[in-house]
Length: 139
Image 1: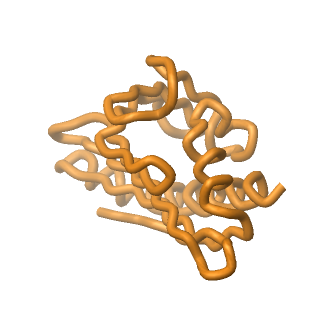
Image 2: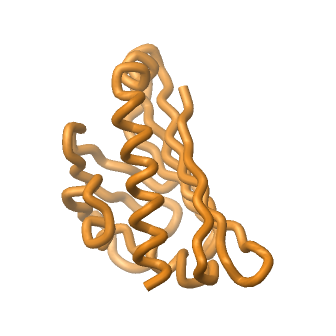
């Protein structure tokens, strides 16, 4: 099961990437994240791990599995019966703006069940995160 949202932001891609890739600061601009703790140091990269706490969702570890600096990153939590994949994609718009797509995919027999149960919450979180990213990036 996959859910996503897309938003246009009146800020250059470099600014949006700066905000989006600084994952430990997400709680500053979205109420869908209580806290994020990076397990490693330095810039976000393939293999980076972060522990994330969100309201109404158990605290989990995410590992970055793909990263294209300035453009996108994907991270994964869990595996087997319940695997969550979250992707964050930035694309330039004519005139200097940025289009961002945030997506969450739930896989595995348990993940698919949880995905259906939390469908409304996930939609609200994706939209809230996109809106917060827009406000912070445009500031």
